[in-house]
Amino acid sequence: MQIDEQDGTSGGKYRAELAGHFGEMTYSRASPQLIIIDHTQVDDALRGKGVGQALAEHAVGAARTGGWKIIPLCPFFKAQVERHPEWQDVIKS
Image 1: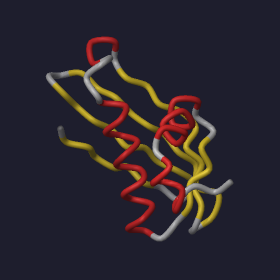
Image 2: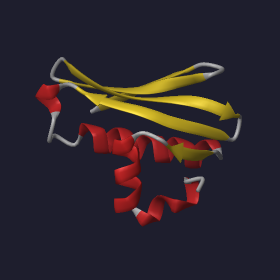
Image 3: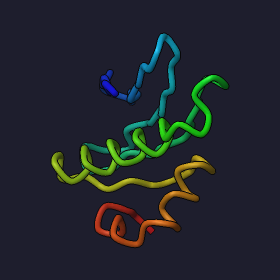
Image 4: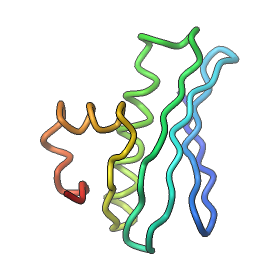
Protein backbone atom coordinates (compact mmCIF):
# COMPACT_ATOMS: atom_id res chain seq x y z
CA MET A 1 0.00 0.00 0.00
CA GLN A 2 1.34 3.39 -1.03
CA ILE A 3 1.03 6.27 1.46
CA ASP A 4 1.52 9.78 0.12
CA GLU A 5 2.18 12.86 2.21
CA GLN A 6 0.84 16.34 1.59
CA ASP A 7 2.50 18.81 3.93
CA GLY A 8 1.89 22.54 4.20
CA THR A 9 2.95 25.22 6.64
CA SER A 10 -0.15 24.83 8.83
CA GLY A 11 -0.84 21.12 8.37
CA GLY A 12 -1.23 18.26 5.97
CA LYS A 13 -2.36 14.70 5.50
CA TYR A 14 -1.22 11.18 4.90
CA ARG A 15 -3.22 9.47 2.15
CA ALA A 16 -3.36 5.78 1.26
CA GLU A 17 -4.88 4.20 -1.82
CA LEU A 18 -5.85 0.56 -2.19
CA ALA A 19 -7.85 -0.83 -5.12
CA GLY A 20 -9.18 2.61 -6.06
CA HIS A 21 -10.35 3.43 -2.52
CA PHE A 22 -8.78 5.88 -0.11
CA GLY A 23 -7.97 6.49 3.51
CA GLU A 24 -6.47 9.61 5.00
CA MET A 25 -5.20 11.00 8.27
CA THR A 26 -5.09 14.78 8.66
CA TYR A 27 -2.99 16.88 10.99
CA SER A 28 -2.37 20.46 12.01
CA ARG A 29 1.12 21.75 12.66
CA ALA A 30 1.26 23.47 16.06
CA SER A 31 5.00 24.19 15.71
CA PRO A 32 7.94 22.78 13.75
CA GLN A 33 8.32 20.13 16.46
CA LEU A 34 4.63 19.35 17.13
CA ILE A 35 1.69 18.09 15.07
CA ILE A 36 -1.90 17.43 16.09
CA ILE A 37 -3.51 14.43 14.41
CA ASP A 38 -7.15 15.45 14.24
CA HIS A 39 -8.98 13.11 11.85
CA THR A 40 -8.81 9.70 10.19
CA GLN A 41 -11.19 8.68 7.41
CA VAL A 42 -11.19 5.36 5.57
CA ASP A 43 -13.56 4.45 2.72
CA ASP A 44 -16.08 1.80 3.78
CA ALA A 45 -14.66 -0.61 1.19
CA LEU A 46 -11.33 -0.57 3.06
CA ARG A 47 -12.60 -1.05 6.59
CA GLY A 48 -10.94 -3.97 8.33
CA LYS A 49 -8.07 -4.08 5.83
CA GLY A 50 -5.51 -2.33 8.05
CA VAL A 51 -5.49 0.98 6.19
CA GLY A 52 -6.07 3.09 9.31
CA GLN A 53 -3.38 1.14 11.15
CA ALA A 54 -0.94 1.69 8.26
CA LEU A 55 -1.67 5.43 8.31
CA ALA A 56 -1.07 5.56 12.09
CA GLU A 57 2.22 3.67 11.75
CA HIS A 58 3.26 6.01 8.95
CA ALA A 59 2.53 9.06 11.13
CA VAL A 60 4.61 7.62 13.97
CA GLY A 61 7.49 6.84 11.59
CA ALA A 62 7.33 10.35 10.12
CA ALA A 63 7.45 11.85 13.62
CA ARG A 64 10.49 9.77 14.51
CA THR A 65 12.27 10.68 11.28
CA GLY A 66 11.31 14.35 11.52
CA GLY A 67 12.07 14.67 15.22
CA TRP A 68 8.63 15.93 16.25
CA LYS A 69 5.92 14.92 18.70
CA ILE A 70 2.24 14.12 18.10
CA ILE A 71 -0.81 15.28 20.04
CA PRO A 72 -3.46 12.61 19.34
CA LEU A 73 -6.87 14.34 19.15
CA CYS A 74 -8.36 11.94 16.59
CA PRO A 75 -10.30 9.20 18.43
CA PHE A 76 -8.99 6.48 16.09
CA PHE A 77 -5.36 7.55 16.47
CA LYS A 78 -5.82 7.94 20.21
CA ALA A 79 -7.08 4.34 20.43
CA GLN A 80 -4.08 3.14 18.40
CA VAL A 81 -1.70 4.94 20.77
CA GLU A 82 -3.27 3.08 23.71
CA ARG A 83 -2.67 -0.24 21.90
CA HIS A 84 0.95 0.61 21.06
CA PRO A 85 2.95 1.66 24.12
CA GLU A 86 6.10 1.53 21.95
CA TRP A 87 4.90 4.74 20.28
CA GLN A 88 5.16 6.78 23.48
CA ASP A 89 8.48 8.29 22.38
CA VAL A 90 6.63 10.47 19.85
CA ILE A 91 3.42 11.14 21.80
CA LYS A 92 3.04 14.47 23.61
CA SER A 93 1.02 13.90 26.75
